[in-house]
Length: 169
Image 1: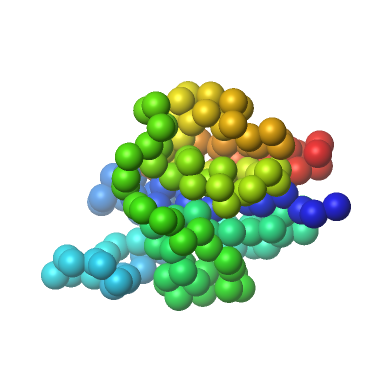
Image 2: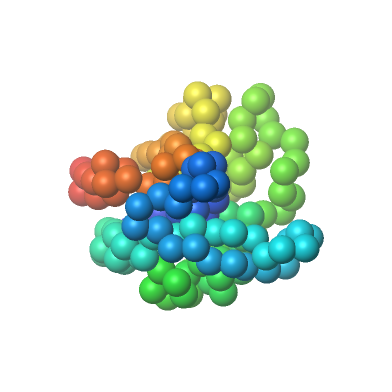
């Protein structure tokens, strides 16, 4: 049987960008990055928790890991190495921040296209009830939409939920 997809957003789940600026979350390290398209005069501040790399690698036994982020393939250059992740496939969004069906997040329609009927778990900080409804209505395979608080990033219960969901398939 083919493994389900684990679709990984960066900003929010891995980089708790909305945490208080003066307080780096415990366990996180600060990285300064200049991905393509970053127009700021100062490098972008990104907080990453190295332990999340181990957690994701453990989940790779049950899932096929895929970047589902606006970083696209650059997540392999900037995010994966500090976390100790191998190069991962990524969703090459046909259009970023474009029009979305009926109040859904702009990524949702493309997530379903990428999954192409396969079971998937998707972690993102922009998932809403509209996205749950849209996926339920338009994706026949199992799907777990894991909303992550961008002030906190991924937490132990999130990793546990992902492992339990994959084990239950």
